[in-house]
Image 1 (tube, rainbow, N blue to C red):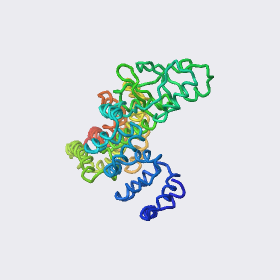
Image 2 (image 1 turned 90 degrees about the vertical axis):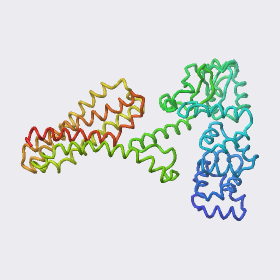
Image 3 (image 1 turned 180 degrees about the vertical axis):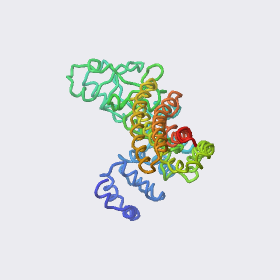
Image 4 (image 1 turned 60 degrees about the horizontal axis):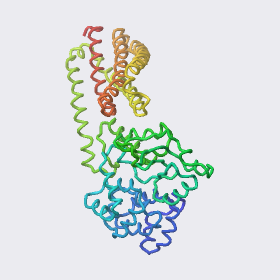
Length: 451
């Protein structure tokens, strides 16, 4: 935010609003970014939202509205006159309108569609039909289309005439009469080219594109892979129907990363911010996984009960269990985190299974050996018990190897089943590792110490 906005508290702006000093508020807002204004409006009482929104400069009102949370958008829509609603819809890009409608109740959606013109309403309905996780669901149909036979001055004049409603003007797309995608050309290339050149002679025919039903996360990753800012979207007949812009791609990746993070923590995705999620919804998102983990960890208890005699013969074995289980869990988490990240960035693919397995096998062997020697020596010096030192050393070696191999294999196997690899990350992986660790520990102890 600007220095003025940072110094001015919410109550000061609301006082200006109450005193009807609209010109002063408008002057302050003209120097602000739409994102910052939307954030500020999310913090003021709902009863002031409509009045404050009406004070905003007309040329930024739609941008601010598009950046607001769905709850504030609904408040404004319910308070808008029909004329105000139509003005906002006319100034918003189509993909922002669709994103908003996906979060609105049916009565609000019906009112918005009723105030949109017939062509816009048709396009909105088409976009709303695409699956939520598809590229078609995040694209916009407002893009710059050029004919290949246009000369440079004609193309520039066409952009000036039709460009106001386009989501992106820098990247233009060349199509034929049937909207078949022929190539791409940038505004920079047009402005620097000679007047006698045609669009066809300048366009790049090597076009990166996606289909409407392709996964939106796959589409978003193409932006980083090919360092592009706009991605054309075609239908099943290879006709161009829209574009995905880089801001939408960032939103998709942020959404997917957030979903992976909560799954790795054994929490169901909420789809809302932390504070916007109700208490009961928080409980519903967390408790199913906790039940699964609680009952799965009962296996560890059953194994421990089976070796109750070993506890009585060598009580020290109990004291060393947490160290072994924690080390195994940490090793498994290390491996799974690296593998899940590699798959998310397309550095690792399911076909790399044996290559990854061989890499982790060697890594786990070396790490396990180092930890085994260090702890074996420590246990011997501390307790002067060579058999206990051997038990700990061998257990650590095998626990580390098993944990790291599970950490690399499980995410890749889950990915091959077309599920999210984050599902088997910590703490679910830790539960599996704990079961393996306890089994290995007491198996080795009973053989070496004869307990």
